[in-house]
Image (cartoon, rainbow, N blue to C red; front, side, top):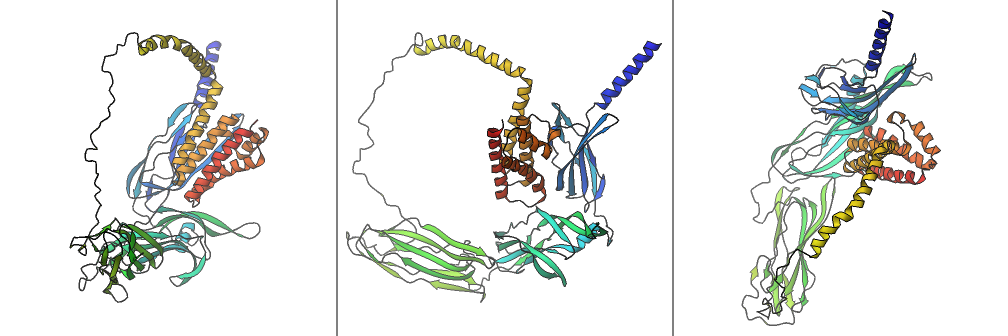
Length: 589
């Protein structure tokens, strides 16, 4: 009986060991039912480290925080306990029952997937109006406002929208990111560059606030009626003071995430009046000057001059057509070259636009360029105005004399000169190159002997290639290094594709750096501590400045997800990562 008892104990211990060694990878949510105005935390937890973590797409949710990584590695009574978690903070987009789909990760060469989790989003829940509640304080002290210069403009009249973020004196903002951009589908729009955010003092609803101007946009409505401007929405990290203090007496702050929106704005666009509208009106609205000029008034036949039609002033310069020149038929006119010298500020578009015609007279004589008119709607007087150009006479001093009576007939449109070739039989080919049509036999040809000999010459190459492949497959450690190096190049190229998409770019860049370290330093993912990386690179003889650059890029990947980043800064991080990897390759001994 004793041997049987020992055998049972051995089986039990073996089963326990197998269970403890089992890999687990699961998804956990902070709650399975929440209001549309609440946040959801999703944790993807594993008990063994892995590579190439891929989260689900989080359809029907906005990612307002994360991914955050947490690693726990401890020994209790000689037994190792390991845990790694990727955390995301989500805001629901609408009500309903939704599924958090599978996440995947590679552990020891195997792909593991989480089980999908269902979450129900209800209507907004009422939050307590507690003066000590950080979320309530944040909601009362942070406001995003869209200030519109005019809510009832005319069609094609410029209006401005200025987005301001108001923050009360006792509240701070760490950073923010845009989660919904305004849409101007029925407007011509242009953003005004803001160089550096300045904190200003002002009032909001009669109370003192600090504010920053986040965005300025000039709009020209292209339709009449009620038009909607979609809201700008931000996810903000708010620093809220608490009643607790540190050992020096300073008040401790509590950080909370808050989504603020400027709300939709409705613009009621008035049509331009029909009464008094000129026939030649093409949609110009503003305050303009108009003129027609020529580069020459006297020239010889077959010489050229430039005739310029120009409108300058303030208004919708890019949104209407210039009047066309009427020129005599004996003047050859080419397609005009359009030019714009327009800049946009909060008052709208200013500058000039022009069409420049190249004109070539064919015959001697005097040719009038008749006066043409330009009409626009003047916003100051709310009436139409028409400006006429001066008549210009072109004097062609020397050249052939035309017998046509149409020399001074005005025509609209552009003409192309027809050039006649004196040699009417030029299309007939007189030189030929004859080739033999005698059939060629494949037998004993060059192709025949090549097909016979090449297979025998390829045999040694096949043998050498096979030996090299077997040698490479036997090198397990080398294959692992090559795989990591390949992944580093792959993710670096993926990061380049994602330039402009902040979150995806920095995830791909971080993966590229991690896989490069695995290839170069032969370390596992669990050893990716900055101190460990610094020590290993020092041991390999890498310069301290290069090490600082590499660690700096890793820190940028961690911090950039929570701070506003431009595409220019992303490009700089990518270029620095590529440069640093190349330098480490040269310096590692």
